[in-house]
Length: 158
Image (cartoon, rainbow, N blue to C red):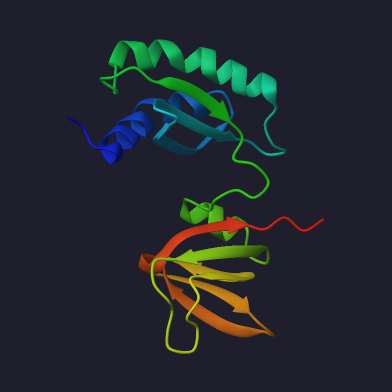
């Protein structure tokens, strides 16, 4: 049986070029179980954001490829969605595009003895392959090893 990560990797490889050919980005892929149902969730994006018509078009476009290559051996529900306003930052380009934006960083473990919480908010200052840098609590600059970042997402401020 394939692992969740293998299914996600195969799906990204199968669908990235198809979606990009339509002028959209395959932002992220999730494969999970909700209420006893397997769900393959594709997050798509484009400059200016996506709408319901984009999601429907991509849904209809990818179904034949998913059926033909069958990267998932069991029954599942396909969902195509926008990553949303408080989107997760997944790829390096997502981080670099959002420098200067408020983010919430959830950690696998506390950062150090002084910062024991595993959920931090601040302004994204920089991103490198191994470090996410944020301005935190009255301007203190924190360098967070990416291996300790469980999730980093944008914070919407009205």
